[in-house]
Length: 228
Image (cartoon, rainbow, N blue to C red):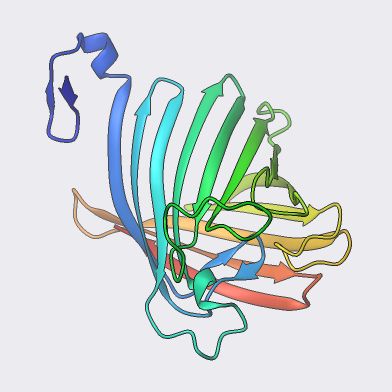
């Protein structure tokens, strides 16, 4: 038995080094995911994640910090609690995410065809070498989405001074009610930035942001957040 969060472990040292538990929370002025604004509200986004070698398991959530009565997105979209698993080998990562929208839906409602509270999404990510640092990502809603919506994305990281940056372009290849499209289109063009602000010699505050454009919906967003 191993309690990595408090440093008590009976595993061999070489195995202990390969395991870790991380937890924290992000605070964002808007929760914009794949070019879609969920809830039109500032949100708090807690997470707990366990890693062991190439295996990762975790839970992540987003909760709106203000009412959503005036939102074009339903209240269901303003509250989200996900579970995810992934395994990385070399430059490839494969995983599956269970997207659960709890507002007005029971956690054990696993109905299909858009009637349930859970969407199951297998995904794959392939990172290029240093000579071609492009990461390709693909995902499909395999359960509870009548359209079986597919999302495809490519991103390129770079840095300017002390700021880490990335350009991401993502879209859907066909009609998707889940992503709000009636045909193929670009829904996510994102210029993201992140850096750490040194508070003391032992503590730095990570901050991040992004300019996000959804060409299909003709909407843009400027997002700012910080991590604890």
